[in-house]
Image 1 (tube, rainbow, N blue to C red):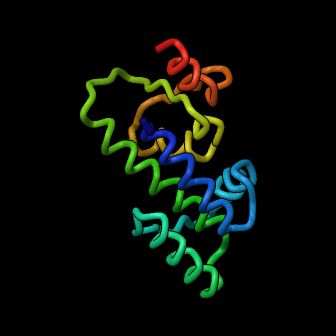
Image 2: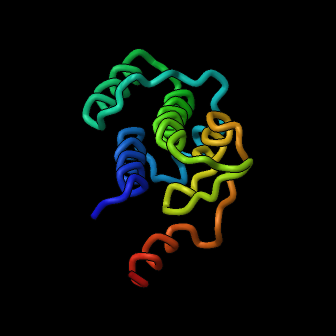
Length: 130
């Protein structure tokens, strides 16, 4: 079984590699963005191609990174619309360690994002209990 969160983590790891950084550096890069670039591709392969083209056209890595986090947040937000939630969302999994993704999710959902301690272990712990 694979979770939506795992797919997003793998996508973010791949995009961080394209931008020649790790996930933490990728998040820090996005926070520095002044003009996020809209990323249209939702497939990892097409997104990678789009990023390579943007880098070749001298787009700033920070703006590309922010655009990628915004793209992931929009996809997650569209999935969240199927659930009736209050004014906050509890976010767990490895992606919850990314401040840039948290900010993008707060912007797209309009809700407060609460991150649990050691969010990368919450899903594994739940799986172990099952």
